[in-house]
Amino acid sequence: MVPYRELLQATDNFSESNLLGVGSSGSVFKGILSDGNLVAIKVLNLKDEEICKRFDAECEVMRRIRHRNLVKVITTCSNEYIRAIVLQYMPNGNLENWLHRQDYVLDLLQRINIMLDVAMAIEYLHHGYDDQVVHCDLKPANVLLDADMVAHVSDFGISKILAQDKSNAQTNTLGTIGYIAPEYGSQGIVSTAGDVYSFGIMLLEALSGKRPTDEIFPENLSLKQWVTASHPNSLMEIIDSNLFQEEDEVNTRHKICISCVIELALDCSKEAPEERINMKEAVIRLANIRKKFLETNKTQSTTLEQHNLL
Image: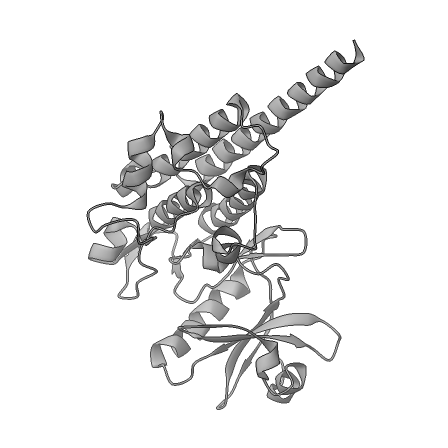
């Protein structure tokens, strides 16, 4: 556990110049520890009793798990003045900004790579440990990107650990509107299937560039319904224009890839939890989509090179 005074020194007394962002649960600051490590320091709002409980939950989860696509917890600080988690610093911020800010651009392959990273992280939480861990709040804002644009899932404040003999639990703590599975929001039932649903919605958001709470959707229309209405014949009309650069030629290879990702997203976000695929299958399918996309690209490039040599 890091001393409080070191966090003060690391952040220049939590100065505004080091503030990375403010959320409902507290603030995140950039800092440099005494050993020279550049870190992100998540400081929770002590006035909120529920948020303080989340500190214990997040620490419990992060003590148990290690994966290249999960944000690494370096240390913590807890006393009468502060509850803070010291995290691996992610210089490229979160996926939310990359999908929705005009000065950020991700092409189709980058989005697939990022979502495959997310899928592998959630697969590990669900299937790679003795007890299942349900994230419960999977969304682009909780996906952080390192210097190499590798994605890391973060924020386990409302996650749940399911014992081996339990496949679901109940909770009064909700995730984020738009990403919550129907059974989670209406009945408080938490299971791995809820994360799968959230992942499916994120896939739709990654390709369409639209948040599930976007103002273009009236009360009786969801992101999933909007995409479903265009699948499979009119998909190119609803995808994010930033998926392609002006010089790119959108071809059959792109369309097949997009259609396959949409189908995967819809299989993840089915209304009934028992009808959804699990994250193991989601990882396999998304990895295969990426592989075929790259193989087709390589084949086309080789053909063009051979043609130019004639």
